[in-house]
Amino acid sequence: DYIKQKLIEVALPKAEMVHKLVKEHGNTVLQEITMQQVLTGMKGIVGLLTCTSKLDPQEGIRFRGYSIPELKQKLPKIKEDGEPLPEGIFYLMLTGELPTNKDVKHISEQWATRAQVIPSHVFDVIEALPKDAHPMIQFNTAILAMSTESQFRKAYLIGMDKKDYWDPTYEGVMDLISRLPIIAAYIYRRVFHKGDHIPQDPSLDWAGNLAHMMGHSSEEVKRLMRLYMLIHSDHEGGNVSAHATHLVGSALSNPYYSFSAGMNGLAGPLHGMANQDVMHWLNKMKREIGSEDPTEAQIKAYAEETIANGRVIPGYGHAVLRKTDPRFQVQLDFANKYIPDAPYIKLVNKVYNVVPDVLLNTGKVKNPWPNVDAVSGSLLTSFGIAEYPIYTVLFGVSRSLGVLTSLIWDRLYGLPIERPKSEPLQWFIDRVPKQ
Ligand code: AMX
Image 1 (cartoon, helix red, strand yellow):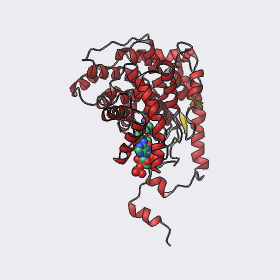
Image 2 (cartoon, rainbow, N blue to C red):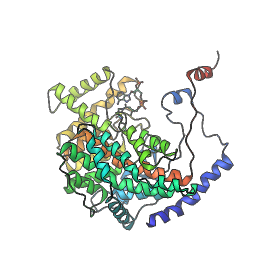
Image 3 (spheres, rainbow, N blue to C red):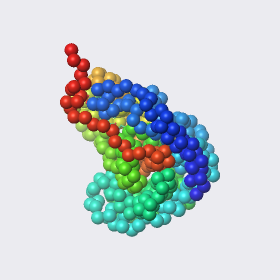
Image 4 (cartoon, rainbow, N blue to C red):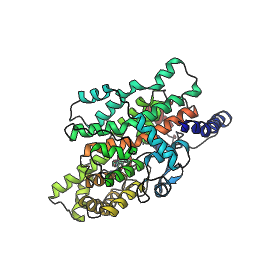
């Protein structure tokens, strides 16, 4: 696998730089932090080194410096008018360089080969769960069950030099990513299609194969799946799924344990489960209003009622972003291009017209604009993937690309165990300046 050689060349000087920064500039003050920051989710506190992507509050996400519109131009595609292949963004996040067609083909083939071997106990473990267990429970259980295959643990027990930790991490990451679409599709077919499974097609790309195994093998859905897998892949290092993966990985837990931690976080309604919750919110709204096509005035009243009842409007707001999420925009553009008349897309557009003002009027929401989840479910539903509980699993398959390339880099940089300081309440009270 020539990518490993490439990675060593790229990473070695960077790892030396990290070492040098710690050794020679360790006392440099980076920023001041406030009481409010610590007590409201550590927002804005720089506490992590992550190079795969960076989130600008106004502009949105950039992957190794490239925005989503730029990546749509620059990453390899199967067809010129199609969507970039997620293999390409994986290569970019991993190496920091844009891939060639050959690189992307190489990764596709690597993953197709590695996906051939999933031990049967993983499927037995899934089958032992009730069918109505949420797909995220089944997904995460399967991820943990796959950790019997961890190469990291085996190499660690044999007694590996610290400098080499990244190597079995890379191997584990490549295995794990290659297998996630099979696990996701298996759960989907088990829960929603009577266990009528569809074998993988190793000739397909990673995202195309996922659509195929789910039973949605039209070119349109494959194209949508490539886009979905591209845009959900990473959102810098501090979001719950990325941070949890990094944190658990810092204990040298293997990639399966680490990723599983991230996926437990993704399953929360304020993070990756929001895409499913948006659909529940839209459908409940339609039911309560008694119309398939509510007016903007009706939507506004319903949104105000949601707030008045002390609930959040899923799909809106963000801990970092302060503008419309470009991941929302690119999906809406896709929908407006291919399916402008789909009822759910019309509804999403109407909600977008009224909800930001409703949120602004609360006077407390820092970002009233839609995030990635405000449209993703409506888009999937409009293309026939209408089983909402699978949406967070699809998000998770995509998120593996970013959080696991970061995990490889954590080991390349030689980052130590993470251990921030905590203090009891009195410590904070004692910090208040005396009058
Ligand atoms: N609806 C109603 N109230 C909201 C809101 C929303 N969409 N977004 C923020 N608020 C509220 C908060 O609950 C908080 O209320 P409180 O002071 O009474 O506790 C107040 O506004 C200030 O919050 P904030 O600083 O603007 O947001 P945050 O950083 O604490 O939280 C987020 C960010 C995403 C959790 C929040 O906006 C939210 O709950 N959104 C809805 C759920 C959602 O869409 N999550 C997906 C995010 C993207 C992702 O990870 N996939």
